[in-house]
Length: 185
Image (cartoon, rainbow, N blue to C red; front, side, top):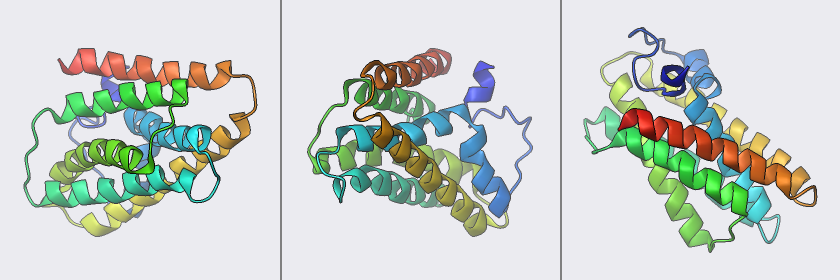
């Protein structure tokens, strides 16, 4: 189970499927991606002071920097500690959800953007030299935006609900991040 949570370890036995559907399904089937994408949306909705445009900055930054990171990975950029940074992203995002931390928009965009680059570089490196890269990345970004939207919808519904529900969700993301970080070390 822990290996299945890491989307970049070869848990798929080295078989990489490409294309729109494969790109779309990847964020939905990798626990690290699913948790990170939903957490960004949850946190955006829970911490937003205004509905528009506050809750969109972090999700749009994540999706954009995920794509930028993937393009960097395709170009051969090597970043140190990619897997530990992906795990750290879950720790930080989970804490942001659990605490409903209000950060200035620039800081929020920078935090999620930095983590998104690491998520993207991991995929870009995996996809380098394969066919259908653009369509695979399009599917991945589309699913990312869908998961952010799902997180926003749930987060918006939880804004005035029991305060423990977001804390429990955030703690779950933190726990996954801690497990992945321990595994990556």
